[in-house]
Image (tube, rainbow, N blue to C red; front, side, top):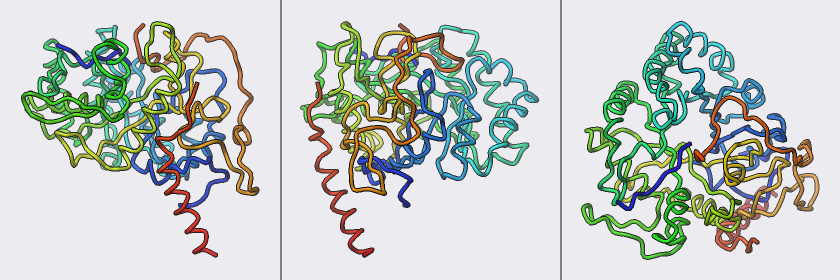
Length: 413
């Protein structure tokens, strides 16, 4: 994950958190990163995910423990071919072996609906990876065809906003000139296979790079005057939509305006170093709370108002072994012990066998471990290359949902 800029050129689970997310996040996904040495077992993550009503998870590999744990849960997965595997998977036979071992072996119990081949390859410091990317995508797709899985599973790859040369105003969106040929070939693949173009969009990076050139309200989905694109005359009241539409314009400039764009990562850190403005608990809560509200409203962007955003939030847990600045280790919605990293319209977990609400983790979660960061495992590494108020923004949503829940219980009685 690279730094990005907006250039100024059902059934109740075994336990359930007092989040009441099922109504709010029916169309949202969460990135399940595991660069940490203190995370709960996948078996203990299952009830946490179910308690949120989240039905989509994205992995940065194809962890067999996770895929086995989520069998028969109806949670959909994006699994990933890591960047280190691209050279191997570009070979058709080895790609088929990878699909058999990491995908077919878990079907149909575990719902795998997409394979992300590589992560932010075009903006990687290792330029050689770009040569493997497209052949690997075609080989993985060919393997799915051979195994009669083509109609069930998409093949794509994720991109950082760093692939754009310009993004402000949104109508000026354009890919970097040295990447245009490669991007066009990838887009041809998407058109042939009907798969989505995945982008990792972080308004936080834009604010971090230019804190004096934009307001926090604009990047946190708060009420603000917004901006009007002088070319399209479209009005933007938040940074994320402006970033997404910059990608739409960049695709349109290459003749691919109808390719589906989905957001494979977005989030906000709850803690940062002294030189990381805006990385606070309160700002993280505002960003993700308002993001959930926006998704619940099923609003598209100004340029694509009817498009489903298909957003994946980054990330499920704080990850203590990620390298880089402090913010890298603090994007999680939850701490490793299962407690919320910050209030997001909920206050703890509820045991269905009692009437009490507790602020501690669900049963089975390990105690918090404060081990020093170590060497990260293979896979994605970092997003960058280098006092909390009550959750008033979510209180109305929580009130309505609680009222509906009580009415439902009364009806059942």
